[in-house]
Amino acid sequence: MSVCDDRAASETPHQSNAAAKPVRWAADTVSTIREGARLRLDHWATSLWHVDRMIDALRREATPYPAMESVLRGFGAYAGEVIVRQAGGEWWSAGGDHGIRTVDGRLWNPLDEARRCLSGQGSLRLLCRDATAGAPEPRDQRPR
Image 1 (cartoon, rainbow, N blue to C red):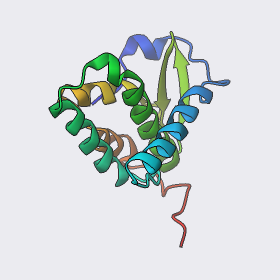
Image 2 (cartoon, one colour; image 1 turned 120 degrees about the horizontal axis):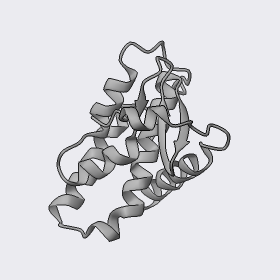
Image 3 (cartoon, one colour; image 1 turned 30 degrees about the vertical axis):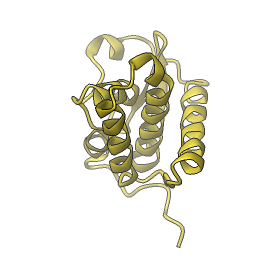
């Protein structure tokens, strides 16, 4: 899983406006998937199973990485938003990279994990599971 290394943890993260880009990427991805694939991504960990499946399908189609770069960034940002909402984390930015700091202080890089998924070596669902393990009840509640 993509827990950030000590180098990234030792850099001073920029939290002001750190969430602006990834939150926008995630919102764009939710909208695109809803309209194109007619799939509702609801910011719950279970929706990441669908995201992992979509990335796996793209990998099997041998889609070139340059064509997938922004799609993977959006999927990673979406997974990061799921972690933020489920575990109460926050986005941080250091050295041009974006990641999540969970309330227990751990750092996660869902954008990198999305790239690992394309190579068949990662899972956004499992990253979220690990990042939210032991977290308090989610802040957002499903609509009833």
